[in-house]
Image (cartoon, rainbow, N blue to C red):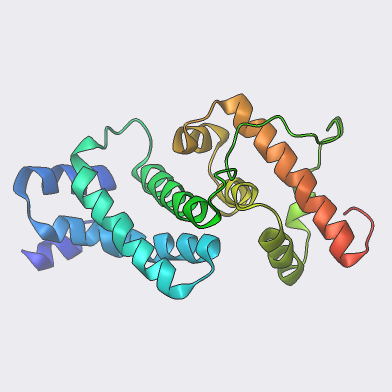
Length: 193
């Protein structure tokens, strides 16, 4: 049976359906093998501690396992997993900071953001400098930037993941890009890129 499973490349949805119908753990194991490294990478990028990221990864997959029957297929399975991952990590960070302001819907006292920061501004930063910038900006801003530019998620997928409107996500991205650019200018004393 295992050789047959290895030869067959089942889609995520097929693996989920087969698992739910048969309760055969091999189907879930394939999902775990496909996504565990990605989930761990997201956890470590947000939580900054390997042990916390390992614990979070296990907790996230337990949550996925227990809620697999609730996956409705309205979005891609990977989007659903990333939604659980980001929300879990953000909840941990909120608990740690105890102020709950990471993804708040506040209207910031930021200057009017009339000028759009081009995507190329972020993409042209040197990797080491970009890491410093991402580690400096608020984690909620970092999360949406990573979803958009690292995970290549659409505005719709991000809005679904964070349960926010698309316009709220567009504004969050716009503000996050401005913050990233400002940090870049301040930290590296360079003109805007």
